[in-house]
Image 1 (spheres, rainbow, N blue to C red):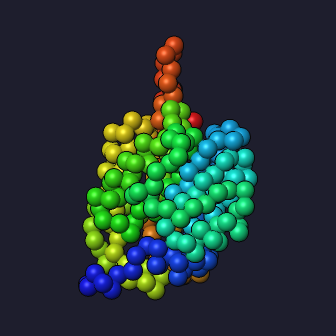
Image 2: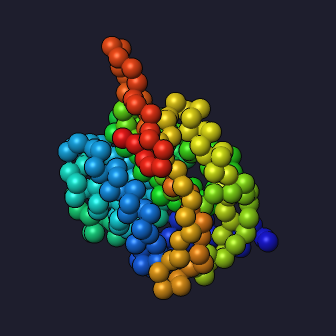
Image 3: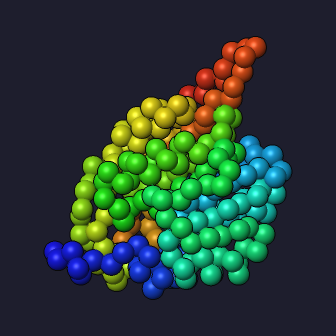
Length: 229
């Protein structure tokens, strides 16, 4: 496939705009992950939503929970929609590959499917960048389509795109190498609403950077069968 025929992520999501929310905005596993995270964050917690899209559901749920949410997205159209939908959050057009947080150390970083339209080394580097932005005691909650995939041309919601990803095991290994503790992970099959896109296997992962504790042991192990705190 000719590289010039492939659309960039910004072009695709500028064109899709609200249609993406209609197809993917009610993913039960994503809503479950947001409820899990919101229950663990204090009011005023600083949260970065990478690939914030229309602001729904991630920024909307966490802002309603009292978090100070910053959303970044490569699509100007998505940023404009998000600012209208979630006025309690702040949104800016930015690329995770080059984004420089003004103040490092987020209480949580959310990453729901923003890395797929990159080359595989960029996926790995972006994953490590996001992990580095999590402060001690903070969380990284992510979802992606897993697989050892590089430069695969596909059609996505009527657009020809090139996608890459990492295997589920590679995601977990890289998070651990960045000093995060993986609390919970699973893969689920998701069917986008209205048949607007093909069914996808989704990897969800909840991870935490251990809190600095000079006087006692680290966090208790996670019980088998469910995510921890």
